Length: 171
Image (cartoon, rainbow, N blue to C red; front, side, top):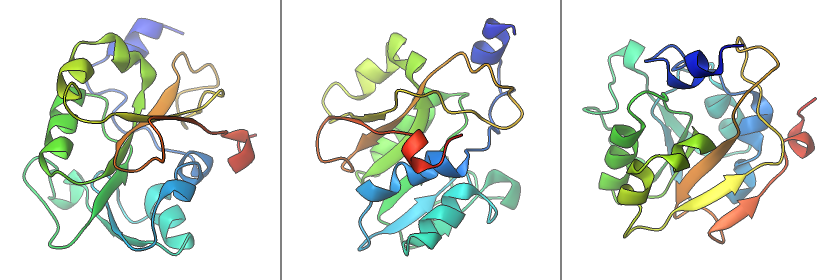
């Protein structure tokens, strides 16, 4: 596998479907008093399916439905939960932070090697939900070369939490 092509391709890995166990891992940290916006998700997304299955209120949007994250905002929502495109990570997190609301966004941990998260979270709380296992995204094969984590603010009970994907159904 060409690791460089997977990690640094412009937009080729932007539509990586999150498996159900990847979504189930964040659910215990979510409040049933909030409305969750899944801004990169269509109705069949595991984010929409699993959050609703857990009894959480969800609104979703997707650029294919004409709802661009950079310009669209639903009328009522309290927190963001999703797997954003890996292209323009800094722009996505800048926009998420601009709302001043909680969020949990799934991202490659390799992004911590970049200066952008250090600048963006310098004066804002960064919380990480990490896993010892590597999440497998459909269509990317079984040799995943990077670890993912939920980059959060206002979601987790402490700055760093370690969960388990296997406990949430990963085979």
